[in-house]
Image (cartoon, rainbow, N blue to C red; front, side, top):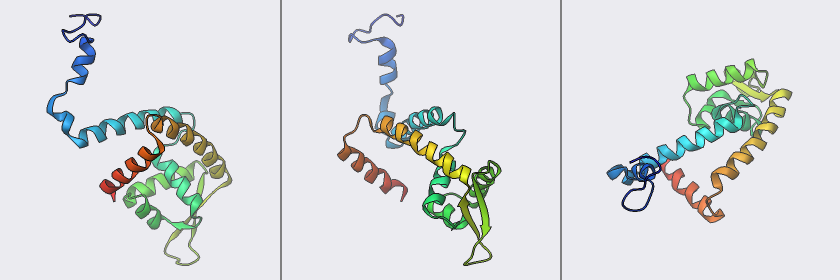
Length: 157
């Protein structure tokens, strides 16, 4: 049967093969992985021009919301390990988007602040996030989005 041929049920054989995934269709984690993959691909396409990853945008946004936040607090809030957090901060600092200062409250901690270039990049990123979020939410009502966020939060919190 060629792509143009239909199966006995009247559909395209390729569509039928893709839809017939068997028992794995009942696995929640499978659907979460598929949804994550689709969202990540769209995010990557949307942010290609900016040259930022999801985690880098999250770091910039959190530092903007909490100027002077310690690296350790940032890592905890974003649920990232110390090594990953340090690597992301190093990259953002190398791009002149943020800086580390010694904390005014605890000299052992690094306080993070956005550089002017970081503020400008975050503004551009927020526009791209708006576009990406509209794409992600396009098939859901506002109430469904709230429900989905609440349900997913129960998995990761």
